[in-house]
Image 1 (cartoon, rainbow, N blue to C red):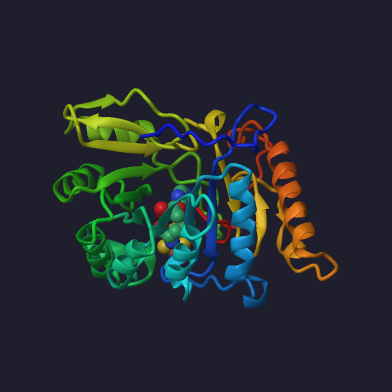
Image 2 (tube, protein in one colour; image 1 turned 30 degrees about the vertical axis):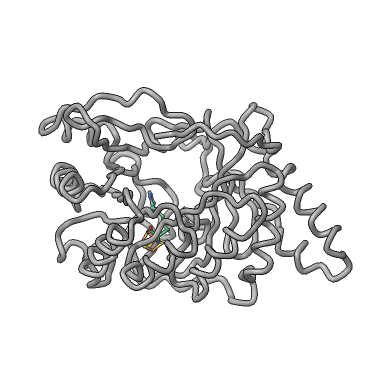
Length: 340
Ligand code: SAM
Ligand code: SF4
């Protein structure tokens, strides 16, 4: 559910949208190979020398906060593969006017790190889990790590990173029969479940508009077992929320493809190699790494140029992602290298 926030953002685009949320990819590498995200043999990793250092990242975030960013979500790839992920959270919380910090993770390292992340100031965690069946998990991710995700979810709850949100992508003929069982388990465990429509952002190009599992189909299936009523306030949140059996529990649907929510978008993205994007589906990026590493610039000039590029990026933002436009072309970077 969207929450009202009070900080004024200076990052307002030509369609009147104020930008307050930055999705930061900490690495493009991953410990799973979810079939809708990257092929099993994917190996086109960003060279380490091109990844932003934590000092560079803090410079970008410090300027972004001054311009109105008040929420940072750490993602990837798998953000917890970054060796200093806990320190990144800690350092963001030590910035002037620290934003709220959350993380989207596959959960594999969460059991080991949940306590340290909470102590570093992490506010919330989203864990991705697409199936409750161990064999299916292995088939869908090419790794036999189902138990690690469940342990990670339990650890997040145990240290008080609650309510844990769980993200689920349904794929046709693979796990599209699990929406009801996933929701039952979520209600039992206290997870806030959100189904994400599969998007055309995978490195393998397997997305198919005709066969994808739509929000309508998911809602139809859930309605066979539960009474769903829309939660009235949505704000800039990507998920449409529904009370389950009168609430207070909810289930969310992120229907980026069939019910786009671009009109209220408040998100910007920073890739692990320091490229600024104004949309998940953007084809253009602005290079912040080059600015950060420009030896002809002093610190004040670097910050001024980053500030300028933040505004240039926001001003160039299109009204919508245009997936349904016949001229839509999938961005060259896969989701794992953008930061989902
Ligand atoms: N590795 C972390 C994880 O899986 O949570 C963070 C990065 S992942 C790219 C972020 C989210 O994007 C996950 O919930 C994942 O399920 C989702 N995702 C990845 N590829 C997708 C696609 N093609 N369509 C829809 N969601 C996708
Ligand atoms: Fe890794 Fe997340 Fe992509 Fe799965 S969805 S392969 S966990 S980045």
